[in-house]
Length: 252
Ligand code: PEP
Image (cartoon, rainbow, N blue to C red):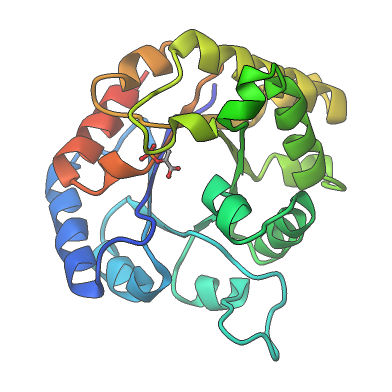
C-alpha cells in the first residue's frame, strides 16, 4: 500500500517573513496529518525559518533544487549536506521550469539525484512532456526518456527511496489539468517502465505524484486513479486553505 504524498512547490514566492506566516497557517489548518505525507518546498532562503516554524509538526520541508558537489568553488550553488543540516528531508529535482529555463538535462538531473540519495534526502524527480510533444504523440517517448535518463544507474535499493512526479508541462500553472484518465495512462506507463528497469515488486512500491494545476476541486478524482499516489502542487500550495483542502482530499 503506497502512502499518498502531497508536496507544495512554492517556486519563487514568499519572502522569509511571508513564509513563516504561511507555515504557521498550515499548522493550524492541518492538525490531523495521518494517512498522508505532507511536504512544503519553499525557496532556499526560507528553509531555516520554515523548518523552525514546522519543527513540532509532521509537515516535512523540501528544497526546490540541489547541486551535485558537496562543497567547493561553485558560486551560487547549494549542496545536499547544507540542506541536511537545516533539517530538509526532500528535494525537487528536474522540475520542468529548471529543464526549460536553467538548461537541466537528464544527466544533470541524475547527478543531483545521486547527491541527494548519498546524503539521505528524498528526491522528488519530475518528468513530463510539453504541449508540442503531446500534440505530436510523443508523450510516452518523452516520459520514457526522462525516466531512463534521470534514473540511470540507480540500484533497486535506491529507486525505492525516490518519489516520481509526472508533470505534463502544458498543465503546469495553466489551469488546464490533465484529465484523471490522461494522467492515469501515463502513471501506469511509468510503473510498467519501472517494472522493466527494476522489477514489478519495486514498481508497485514507488510513489508517483501527478502535478499540473491540481486544486481542491480535482484532487479527489485524480487520487481515485489506481496509480496516482499524490500531487506536486504549485499555485494552490501558496494559500493554506487550498493546500490543506488538497491534503484532505488526497486521503484515499
Ligand atoms: C508545479 O509547479 O510543479 C505545478 C504543478 O504547478 P501548478 O500546480 O501551479 O500547475
